[in-house]
Image 1: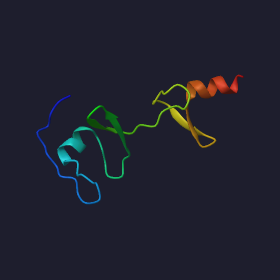
Image 2: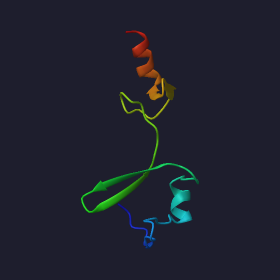
Image 3: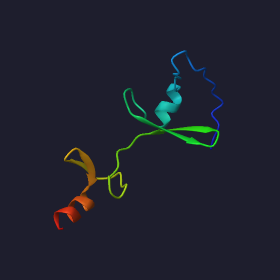
Length: 80
């Protein structure tokens, strides 16, 4: 993990501001979703990328009956 040297305070509502340099570097735009993970004593933020319900693949994902499914798994379901 690479340290950025940036320190931010948490406001009274529990919010922090991600510096523009980090947002640009990680391609995080306004209103993008961010996943929050806890690993021991670390809080990890990751840009959310929708993935297939079945295999976890994040490429070529489509909505099917309100769920995200990749093309490969969708083809498998159709051939059942």
